[in-house]
Image (tube, rainbow, N blue to C red; front, side, top):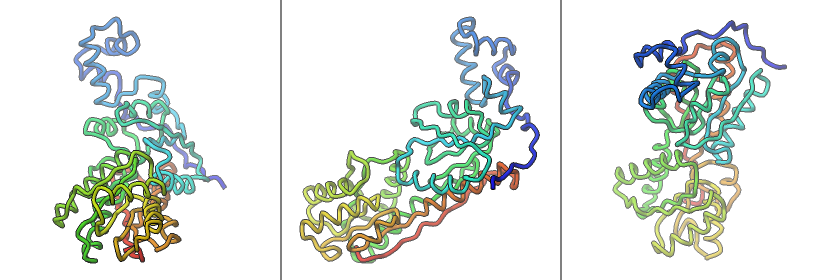
Amino acid sequence: MTEQKSNKSRRSTGKVTLADIAKKVGVGAMTVSRAIHKPDLVSEELRDKIQQTIQEMGYIPNVAARNLASVNSNNIVIVTTSLIATENTLILEGLQRELQTANVQLLFLLTEKDKDWIHEAIQYSPEIIVLLNMEYDANQSQRLKNLNLPLISIGAHKTDGLGINIGVDISQVIHLLVSHLLQKGKQEIGLLCANQQLSIFQQYMKSWHSACLQYAINPHLVLHGANHASFKTGAQLFNEAFLLWGRIDAFICLSDEMACGALFEAHRRHINIPYETTISSIGGLEVSEVCYPKLTTVAIPYKEMGILAGRTVRRLFNQQIAYKPDSILVRSRLIIRDST
């Protein structure tokens, strides 16, 4: 049975208005309107100043503003830079499952980091904006706050007070694996990376360098492949690593698929895992349980993160909970198996 939203009147009118922009710039509202609708009639310098103020204050200068102020669109806009990254597909699976009976419309905005994705998102008159593994700078953060819209971010754990964050401590993930391998007596540890979503990759690299500094191990044993994470990519990088580094103590792969590819290549080369070298990974997917030997991995509950986000969206939409900034840390866990 479809969940019905509780009776909601019109939205709060706490949105930035044309008059607010005019007051900030020090001109009349008519001048601001001209700069938006007939820019040729306004000097370039003043036009730039007005556009910058519009971005900073989060003003919505089109029909979307009227929608936001007067009606309920039922639109939940999900902003991301990738719909095929394993992490994102699992998160979305959980989120969609939780919202399948809710009276909402999910809209996906596939964008790039350097685009004005905030401006694009508000064109859809969102009731709630969901950021899926999206990074944002201080200016974008302020613009999002100025929208006065419920915001949920899913991905890395954040405590910046912007919206509701549902995230994993990426630094803990790498530290768990490095600490485990050091306890096993491994000193030369290599990191194998595929072409993946930039924001996620940057988080892992920051965590890798932090762990190397803390445990005084070599941070330069890193190989990055041009292709997306797959069995083939893992096998290729495993081979390249032996050519470049010789035989080292342990490998950490940034995905279970890559680790399985590395395992297959080790079998082909008659390299005994875990006695000659070890292989571990990040993900905790089903494939890590069925390969041989079974993979040591850090399980990240991507689907559970999506379910939690979906539940939060539904409750906000139905006004069952009040919207306020929050930071929800989702725990990852180390699963030690035969590959280490």
